[in-house]
Length: 139
Image 1 (cartoon, rainbow, N blue to C red):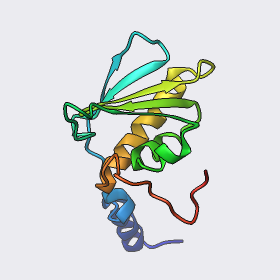
Image 2 (tube, rainbow, N blue to C red):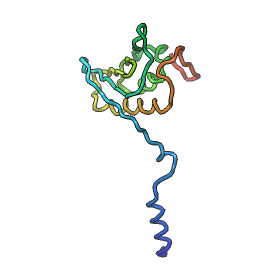
Image 3 (cartoon, one colour):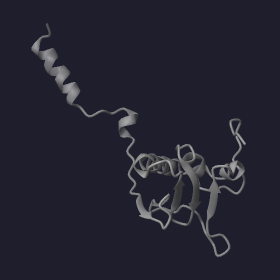
Image 4 (cartoon, helix red, strand yellow):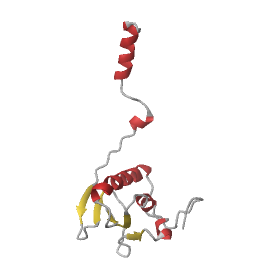
């Protein structure tokens, strides 16, 4: 049987906030969504710059089968790991995700939110000038 002083110490320790690195990692990002004319597409607005666009370059479109183009975009690489993502279009301040018709938005949307938030935590650019090829890149 525990003495009262040990029990009080144990309770105090349990009441302390966790200080592990995992508990200190907070994602502070607000992502809005907008419907598009296509019910299979949803526009995600992270309220941060996605791409540097110009008059000549207004965005980046990629489909799941465009492996070389996907390797140019760390953001696309992350989003295509979500089951059901069919294609992406990135503009200056948005990412439009098109899903397969057999997948419901209620299922896929939380995963897309998570991938976008995790991506912005890395500080990487959404698009590179040249493909990012690693020893695990599959074409």
